[in-house]
Structures are given as C-alpha cells and as structure tokens.
Image (cartoon, rainbow, N blue to C red; front, side, top):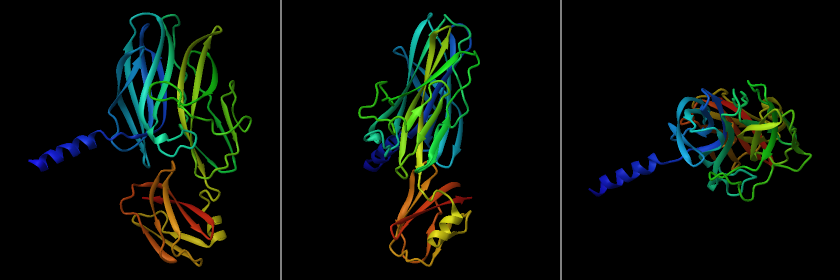
Length: 328
C-alpha cells in the first residue's frame, strides 16, 4: 500500500515538471471584425512540453493549443494557436505566462526562480484590417566574445502600418518588470535603432554568458498606435576559440575524433591534460556533461546524447579550448 502511494506521488510530481523557457514571441491576426487568432512561439527545453497554454485578456483566460513542435538539439520550438471573439470594440491587454526561465542568465538576478511573461496590446473594432507585425527570425542569437553582434530585428506588416522598435526590461509572469533587471551593456555599446530595428552590441566581453532582452514592436496608423507586441530574445556569448576546429588544434595541440561521432569522443594531445576539467554544452549554452580527464588519450562516452551539435570545452594550462562536434 505504501509503495503504491509513493509511485502515485512520483507520477504526480513528474507530470508537473515545468520546462525551462528560453525565449517567446506573441502575434495575432484578425479573422473577422471582433475575432482574432493569437499565436505564441515558445522556445523551451524538451522536458514535458506543454500541449496548451493560457493567455489572459483583460482578466479573462483563453487556451491556445499546440500546433507544431520543431526540436533542434535540446530546444523545442513550439507554436500555440487559439481564437478569441471580443465582446465589443475597445483596447485590450494580453498577458502570456510562460513558466520558468533558464538559470544563470547574467542580467536577470536568480533567473531560475523568475517566471517569464510577455504582453501585447490591441485596439479592437476601430481599425480593419488589424494584423500584428511578423517575422521569421530565430529568437536565439549567438556572438563570439569581444566581437560585434548586429541583428536585424525589423518585422513585416501586411497592413502596411508604420513600425517602431523599443527595448524594455523583461517581465515576470504577472506582467510587471523584473526587479534588478539590467540591459546587457550601456549605451552606445548596446543599442537598438527604433526605426530600422537593428540591434547592435559592441562588444560583449564575458565568455559563455547568456542574456535575455525584451523587444517591443509598436504599430502606428495615421499617427495613432493601434497595437503592440512583445518578443523575449535569448543571447549567447561564445568563447574566443568558438568552433574553429583547425586553429584550436594547431594552437593547443589538441584533437578530438571521430567527428561526427555516435558513442564516444577520443582526445589526443601532447600536452598534459591529466586532471584537466571538461564540459560539454549544447548550442544554447546548457551544460550537458562535465567531468575530469584522466590522461592524454581519454575517451568521453556519449551514449545517452541526442543527435545534434555540441561544444566541448577543456581548460589546459590556463587556456580554454572549445571545439564543436556532432552527434549522429
């Protein structure tokens, strides 16, 4: 009897494990005069992917159901869609509660315990057609440390409305801004052009750091703002050695093979790597495996790794060596 209760409790606990959310975007399109289709695009880990999410519209809730899932490495890109008919014309605020953030985000204190929220604002009934701006840009950006990040965040608008772009502090799940949030860097080193949507960062200086930013896109018609949507993005800073396999091998005298691999990596070097620490991350910076090397002809076993791209980092004589490898 006690065993059965324990099993049931474990099942209940596991069924409520929340995925970590890296980035998210909200958009909408007008179906009829007062009916709109809302879409959430959510980048999350692959643990217990939600089949639906709720959004709040002026205090009422509607459900958006999963429409598609695209898994790249350990990241699930999930699209959720649902329709809502407004009772009357007016201005409405939409809030999406997107669960737990990833831990270790540099510009969000204690990020693993800070839930994510994004908003949209829409004027219903007065403007037809009224469809939000859209884009096909990935919500995760990567840049080499001490290099320049330049990303075109501009969007398209089928209604030919004028668009403006602003960076806001990231939000909690209650819609309020995160306490202690800071932009990744100071102006002018970090800036967004409000007209062109070009994001420029010159130059991130912390290796392997991760940051979150919130982009607000406003739509203007005849000088009046008729809607606004938010898009939380995730920025990853890669190390100096990046993924340049040949240069790293020459400089540090280290080689890994086979690459691509399926079960294990072998490290070959003339340097002394005994007791050197290593870590394997996926492409969004999440640590998958870490340990300590025993000798100069070491094998790292990858039996439980999913197919995808990974980065192996090794500290040798105060130098960090990072190399991309592929699991088939």
